[in-house]
Image (cartoon, rainbow over all chains, first blue to last red; front, side):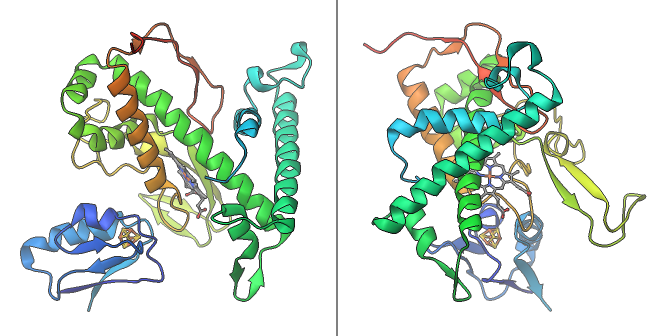
Length: 63
Length: 264
Ligand code: HEM
Ligand code: SF4
């Protein structure tokens, strides 16, 4: 599955990076970037946690 | 951070105490002693604090309008535009006020509350002093434990059912952070203070649209403070009972007597 960060919503609180550092990185511009094209099965749980923790609800799976 | 002169810092301390600690008789200094501690005294104290703070920032705005400064937050606010419009005087004052209040009481009570809880759990404190790389996770646990902000409020915008309780549009509700941060479904053994707790998904900074703007900055402040404090005074310990703030909004420690060996 693919995951997306809505950059208009993201405020760079880096909760996503804490939950799934393999998938999200927050750069110096305080916006989270998705590092992987496809989220592998074993990382899905971590990404779900990132989605839950994101204070701005900026992260979503791409259908 | 806001470019205020150091000579004004004690005034900011006094005013943020008055506004957020308005219910505490110690800060009701404009009220005759016999009348302190009442609801009316609290309202008057908060109002005096507000009014003085707004007057103070109105002067700072004037100063910057006349002489814009480089690398200055208030100048930046004066010059910013949203959808081509400048911020109104009211918005500017409200934002200055919000920054000084939200940035002050919270972080400083996380520091005092954090030192208190570490001293009350000597085994956790010893663990941290032995391995300062635990500081980041210790700070998360301090934030969970102290929950410096007790609550924020929301107005329900649409009827909704949560766990069998119906909330109606227009209902006002209070979100109690100390309670959510001790939710036994979220935290294993929530009443244990554990500086290595993982996961630690506390909501001390709120969640959603109004999530704390200063959360990253606050954590940095806490980190620097505890790093320096324990580097210079590793034997710091409580020397008496803390005196707590009377408030249902801020979990504050007003006075925290400590003892330590001074640096040589
Ligand atoms: C340990 C320290 C802090 C704690 C526990 C804390 C807590 C909170 C909480 C719970 C909220 C959520 C409000 C809501 O959901 O209605 C909030 C909002 C806010 N905080 Fe903090 N805060 C801290 C430090 C700071 C600092 C250092 C600043 C400024 C530099 C700051 C600025 C703000 C602002 C501007 C908001 C409003 C955000 C909005 O409405 O969009 N806070 N804070
Ligand atoms: S947690 Fe949300 S707001 Fe924070 S950096 Fe990640 S996507 Fe952005």
